[in-house]
Length: 380
Image 1 (cartoon, rainbow, N blue to C red):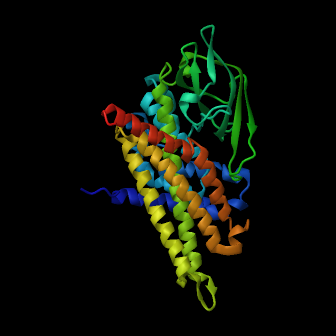
Image 2: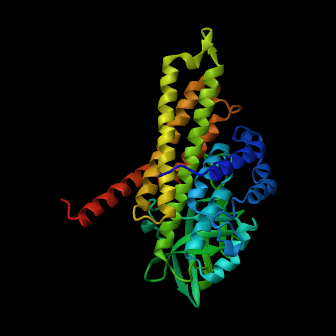
Image 3: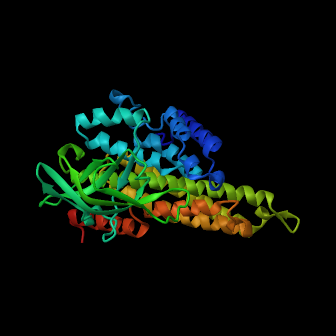
């Protein structure tokens, strides 16, 4: 059985890499201002490539592909430090395809496929851990709808998005669900975080008696599984991007080790540098494998998909941090400069590491799921 990607999938990956290298090379990000990083030209180019329509079913103007088909393109987003607006919109697309009502799908999915709608997500809260179960922001019944007061944090590009998917609890039952809210909604305000990832913006989103109606709720009613699906798909896409960051930093290290001479020979000929590069290569390959398997498991709705995502999210985060640090060390003093920009990859990796759960949370989740499985099987 062939477990490799198809030639067409590899060709599409190369197209995405070429496009991003020509228009949004991560090594040049430091020279771009905010307007250039969010340029309509970049967004439209990715739309023309078909990135935004990949998960949209054909009935709504999309390509009807799966998360497996997205695994390689999302790596390229990590390699290029592409803006999170596309990745977050893709994450939301999967959620809408899986859980939205037919009316919501007919209204939103064609806009996404045509590049006319950007979506942000808002899950994290200041007084909770990463788990959706710990979320406490509640929509209180008010008249024929609900009202929301409270705060979400680390919402990517939320103020510039056309729509925000917000994880909430609803009414006295406290059922988890998702609401799709436009940033212009009454009572919404935004405060830009001081970001570690200095080339992108994340926001604190404050709700002050913000009104909701039933049509705002994805699926028409609170669906707890929808929040967990958003959490897992977001974690998968973050893991894929961290895998791409690791691969980019490994390539940069090998290229530098070949051309940097010391004592009359390339530093890559020294055993200490060879060992570092070999260890990084093994880690990068393993992180790719973890992300690819998680993409298949989620796409196939395998019973082990949440565990596969947690394994990928934790391992890819560890690998990205390790490879970025090693790469900076191999480059020596120049590796710490703003002009070379290696630290931008480390900054993005650290930010992605904490979106949708950090490594400690996901390891604990894997352990809890494994113990629960053993208990269900009657194993002492």
